[in-house]
Length: 330
View 1: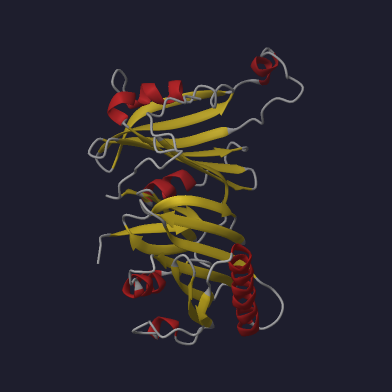
View 2: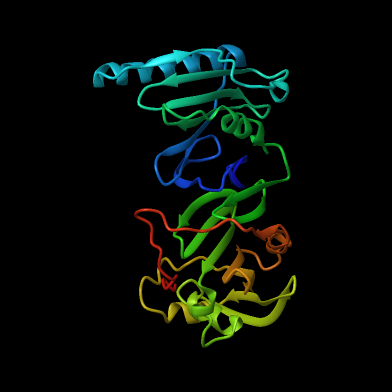
């Protein structure tokens, strides 16, 4: 089987072919969708949602029924053939499904889709499918993907892994926004009045050509830091050149002297951050924790740094994505 890569998003983790890259992602922890593509077709789709009310088994069956009915209607409207094999037998082992509510099925139209509908212990339901051309057999691949599915709900932290960027974030931080440009990946999380930002920038040798990391950081993020007094010092992160950042709000008088709108100034924030240069992979990683109260820093940034890894997975530009150097300085 091909080399494997890890994908983790909103508390769900999968091991997939390293040739499959994220093509689309929507939603939040309660309900969402992710799609992974290779160079030819969509290869994996993952849907999740939290269902409330009646028993899990009945809800799961209804979910599969509605899903297949909608597919059949679309096929009829398009004049395309459509067939379904419910409770399919292609799995060699079902030990990983023992004691769980699930259904395995296959549908065929323009492609063949191997499907697993599964009720998770945390209360969410997932619909996971691996797609193949009609003339190829991916039973073993589908089974490997199904077996790799891990639900992290209920843990103290959640793993996030995309395009080779891996890190763990405390579970009470919720993903607020994300930008997945190949030159600059950024995921923003919030918890009450706390904000956590995780960045990875490519082509570090170009970004740092004429500057040390501790000098580059406040220039690159100038807009973001404009209402703060920032102190940056050289540091070390696991043997890599790094910068330690501490920020505090500028005085209110200085903020009032700024151009309008002074009636609604930015909230006063403190900052604790770490940035480091992974020269071997030619990347810069940054973890930033913004908080409203002076003594509210509780080591979150350091915990994320400790759970932050660069893996060997390639970061490639996708069609329609910005593959250039991260020049969008703030």
